[in-house]
Length: 202
Picture 1 (cartoon, one colour):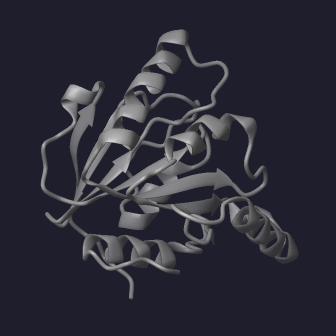
Picture 2: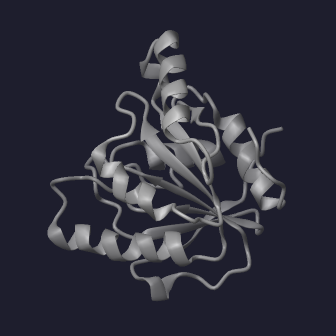
Picture 3: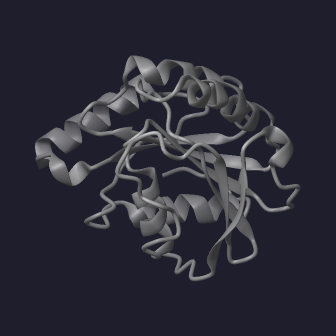
């Protein structure tokens, strides 16, 4: 089963926790390092080329952006983290804004945690991983840019990440390529199960 998600639209940007919209819909958040391909993947998931802006310079997205899907769910794009050259005020904003969302948002049901398949887990991922402790939502590791690796390498990195991120709240990782369309069916299925309130197991 795949979803057309043809009615995806920008709902609101939030620069501080008070700006989070008081909505009734379940939320699926995209989290990842700067330049990991979040905007490209979001656009590919909803099959719209320009719903989320794809910045040429990492660290440009500084707000949490909420996208309404078919009047029944939200895709939530968090600012990228780990960009060393980001201005201090941008780094401070991430440290205040994103933990507030990940630790306090009742509507959040699933996090798509994007990791560059060529690099795997890095030290900059550790603070984010800590935010998932005791989470009531599921975390699905999503390995991006898989088309840039050979098949044996793809299988190896998936097994390695599955070993590193085992147990609650983590689901088995999924490899994707926004350019090739790989893995989008699995992501849409996981999101749809969350939207319908069904237990997710891939």
